Image (cartoon, rainbow, N blue to C red; front, side):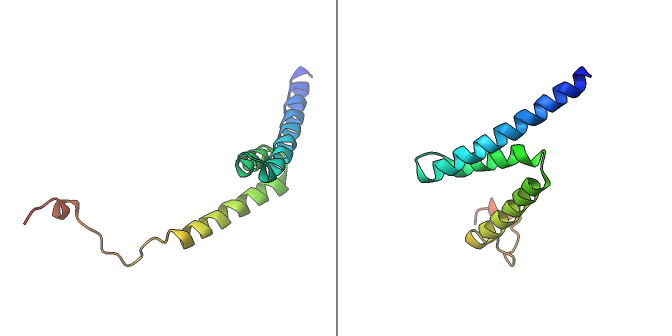
Length: 90
């Protein structure tokens, strides 16, 4: 019975902490502070308990990868250099 109570307290603290971080992050978007980082931390806590938060985190990860590939494209047709060739002097 004690273990069940401890798990319920942990779950409740994750939920309260996650929503608190989420709200503080939203406030930090309009005030100085790392708003997006705090929002992601809050969603990370909530993702341990709620499916909607996990799906939102997965979508954010996918979209951030897509944006990163647009901003910093990986050269697909670039020839691979042999490390031995780059160290040779002519």
